[in-house]
Every structure is written in structure tokens, then in C-alpha cells.
Image (cartoon, rainbow, N blue to C red; front, side):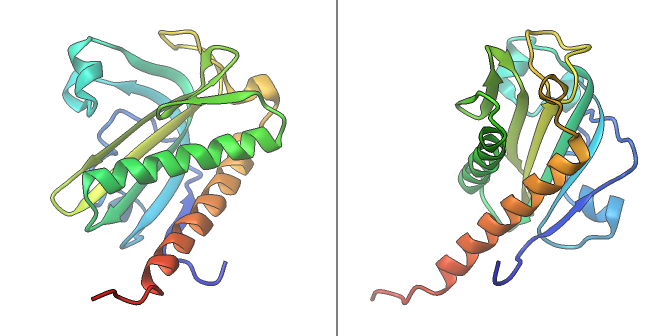
Length: 188
């Protein structure tokens, strides 16, 4: 990678995701990283209705829970919702590519990943007044989930090392996009 446009970090402390982490400046307040950033951490997941960002899930009274997940939170400043969902799709695709490289039979359906008809991921992209916000969670285990799931442990994938690979690969692709957009001569 020629140049990085994103700060990345895996947080070693256990953080249980409840939806409140999908908020402007959460990464900055938690880590001191200011600006565009992506972090990962391990913890449970239990998103309550008052924190549910996905209106479809909220209206269908879906439960988003798991005992142990690998979470990614991304914040990109000055970006809109369309770009946030495109970046979410890119991030999910990078996870899929890394899993395929490990011979894991993962399939992508929309913004979700499935292995053997078990749901591996949850994800959402949203915006705040100042930034685009993305959360992606991968099941580490199948315990505590309300639907049929698959998990990283099913394929002996160590979550911390995997999160580092995902963050590095995403940073490389994101930075490549920023550089590609900035080297184009304007057409008048």
C-alpha cells in the first residue's frame, strides 16, 4: 500500500456490542483515534429496540443477539449514506475473500455472509450529522443466536488474527480507492 487513509486497530478489551457503539466519535472517545478509522473487538451482541439502526429489523421485531462475536466499527467523516452502504459492501466482500482464501465455503447474499445456510454476519451502515457509520459482526461461536448461524470457530479461525487481516485488507482497498479518486484529472 502506497499510503494509508484510515487508522485501524484491534481493541484487546472485551466490549459487548449493544448498538450504542454505532455513534459519531465513538472510536475517538474509546481510542483517541481522530478521523477516519476502523476498529475491531470481541464481545457479545444484544441490540435493543432503542438502539436498532435497521428499521426493517425493528418493524419485524427481529432479535440481534449472540454470545460471542468479532465486531468491526468503521467511521468515515463527511460521507453520505449511499457511500456508507457501498463501503459496507466492500468490507463484507473483503471478509468473504479472506474466508474463501482459507477454503471456507462462504456465500454473500446482499450485505450478509452465509456458510452452509448458517448466517455468519450481521451488518448495518448508517450516517450521523458528521459521518458514515458501519457495524459488522461475525459469529465467533453459534451460542446465543436466535437464528441458524455459522461461526468462525466452526473453521478453526482465530478471531484476533483474522480481524487484523480483515482490517489490513480493508485499509489497503479503501486507501486505493481514495488515491484512485484523487489522481483523476477533471473533465470540464
